[in-house]
Image: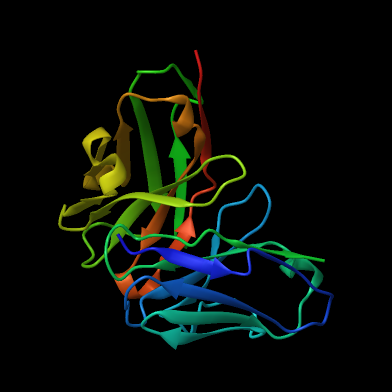
Length: 106
Length: 120
């Protein structure tokens, strides 16, 4: 299985800050990397697919980059609704493993 | 608009078999590349990918659960089923189904999820 790690596990930031979350794959996955946002008690929501493609309807303050083993999710100006949990997922090879998540605290 | 919704028992006993149904609208398995996956999340923990079924009935499973899992579909009824045998308290989780247009586009959207508790 491809192992996914995320760092940091949690971070504290303020409204308006720029934050970056890192996701690393245990082997090269090309650009088959997705980012999800999960609010408490809700299903995950797709933010970014194919490493850097913004899902329709997602605010442009979210952006993704990277390839092969190293990826980043950047939120350019944190809004109050962004203080939730973020997961990366590889869809290069089954099982389509997720990272452990990063919690963004206010 | 694509929507999915999970249904099934909320409480099962240890050793029992869980069967969940994902009922969807807004897409069809008659479309090439379409897939539906199941993902679960124990309370307070991370997401775990379980299984995937493609438009052509190809099926993929998480090897850690492979012997216990089965995924099937009813194309005419727009439904996908997940069976997990020999349930254990560690299988207590919210179970989600989600649509996938291709490997490159991730899972979107997801159903709201259904919490399944395993307890005697």
